[in-house]
Length: 110
Image (cartoon, rainbow, N blue to C red):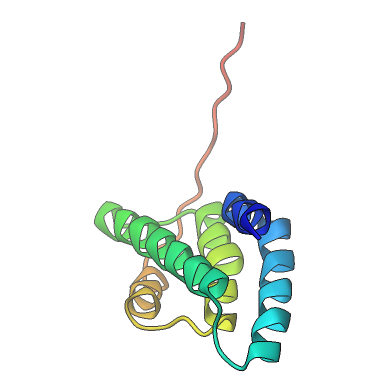
């Protein structure tokens, strides 16, 4: 069980793995009829990351398309699907009001 939890925690930053982990957790939780410790941990990690990034973008005053996609599609949507709400939902509402800015990435030439 510790290996599963470690894999889930490591997968928080991996979009494909997080969706798979959510599927497994939802299946596991539906059998128990309540949220497992693993689900609560994933919700807590998702909440923390959404609030942290969202507040950073709000303070900055804009968000890029890539940042929005990462925050909304890969963090907020799975978080909501697991039943998360509250502060993260409020932060996401404020992020959605931010202007989108195109960001260009420069690479260092050797």
